[in-house]
Length: 182
Image 1 (cartoon, rainbow, N blue to C red):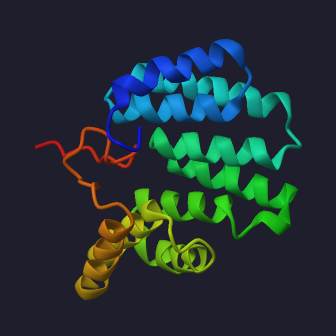
Image 2 (image 1 turned 120 degrees about the vertical axis):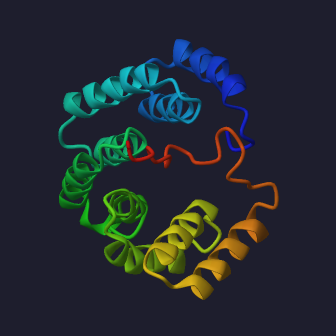
Image 3 (image 1 turned 90 degrees about the vertical axis):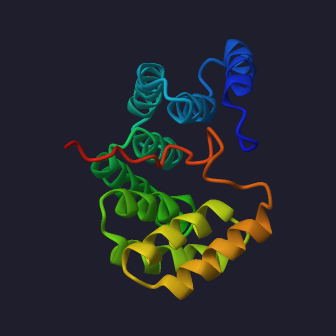
């Protein structure tokens, strides 16, 4: 998946799920791969599996973080924010980890770039080698006109992952945008 080879990732994830059908993060990854390769129906089906898993254990912060990620992958950012809120309520000590990233990703999708920037900076203070967080921060900085800072983030993305390219079939990781209709 990280190499942009989504089609090769699908059978691997399916084999894994054949052995561990309730592994929520495998469903999240499969939804991501499907979304990245343009199979929106399959991505939604995997998203429903993640929703089902979260509903089975409503007191699991871990489940709500997984739900937040799959909602972001599916472009359902408002629902991702709601899942983050539940995750943080259930495990406040985990606020500055994955929930923080998912919240920032949702704000980026919603066009609330100013809200996403400080969250990503806080997340990156803890996880400075997360190239996806740097990529999101570059997007947010471009959108608010901070072009020099965006170039710095883009350079960091390439330092961390020299093969990264927005042209890879899977490079957007579910962050693709629909072009406005005419």
